[in-house]
Image (tube, rainbow, N blue to C red; front, side, top):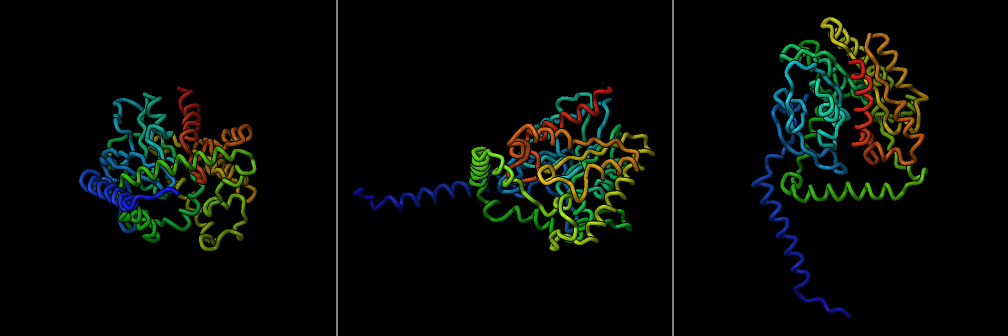
Amino acid sequence: MIKINKFFFPSIILTIFIYFLLDFVITNLFLKKYDDGCYEIEEYYYELKKKCSKKDQFKSSFPIVNVYTDEFGMRIGKNNLNKINKENVLIFGDSFTFGVGLEYEETFVGVLQNKLTDFNFYNHAVGSYSPSVHYYRLKKTLSNTNIIPKKIIVFLDITDVYDEGNRWTYNDNNLTPLLKSNEWAEHLKKKNKFFKKNFKISIFIASKINFKLRSYISYKKNNIETDKNKIKKSFQGQFTYTNIKELNNLYWTEEIFNNGILNIKKYISLISGIARSNEIEFLVVIYPWAETIEFGQKEFDWEKFGETLCDNNKCKLINTFPYFKDYAKKNINWSQDLYFIKDEHFNEKGNIIIAKILEENLIKKY
């Protein structure tokens, strides 16, 4: 029988205590600047801070990444340098377009920025932004900066229906978008709980281990049945394959859904009007969530919605659905190849595909 030295457990406890003490001291002496991320949070609105350089973790299952912003509060690469006498492209979207969980250079905007040296890309995207916010940000950029765009690209996300129906409202008096409640602002603030604020080394290590472990387990279970089980069903995206009356009534009503659709149409029309009056090419990009590929669009066809939207507003539609559907047919592990595990956001490979599609559609005629 193995005898355990009486100092064994006390020494382990002391080692753990010293480790966390060092983590606490180093965090508060050298890493405190990462406390609040790059979000400028008001009670009913939020945006990115200007000239910010901090770490960010979208959720606990995602890796920690660097976020840098420019003088306009837009996400950029660490050594970003816009070029004089190049065509300016304004990009609008939400967390997909922001590139959560990825370094800027791994996002499709970052890939395009590095490859297409004849263009400047200005990425206005922030998580849970939707067309009413895009409209506001576009007007703000055109009136408050010297950026003269050649193209406007709006990445229309499936969650925009819920965001326009129940998250954002538009104050017609001062022409600004406002959150219907401060729930989202409070959510951003909750990212700064005591442990996250004071033990950043531990959080970073745990994030890396968690992400690698989840990836390893996912790829070990590589038959088609388990792959289907890994695909997340979300309350935001279920309306494409679930009747509106059967959606979770904690989030959805027919009024919320209908208002969401109407507001998307309204603000895409307003953005289109600004583009036409300023002779700017206007493009809309649509892309699938994993659940949309897996469960289909029998209740609401997002592709047809995008086509009709652009037919009515004289915009060019870039439909990426066929590319991802084709990939899914040919690859049994398509969901974990293209998306973060059990999440709707594209991983690095998914972003590379988006970048390639955009390059083919935007640049070949030049």
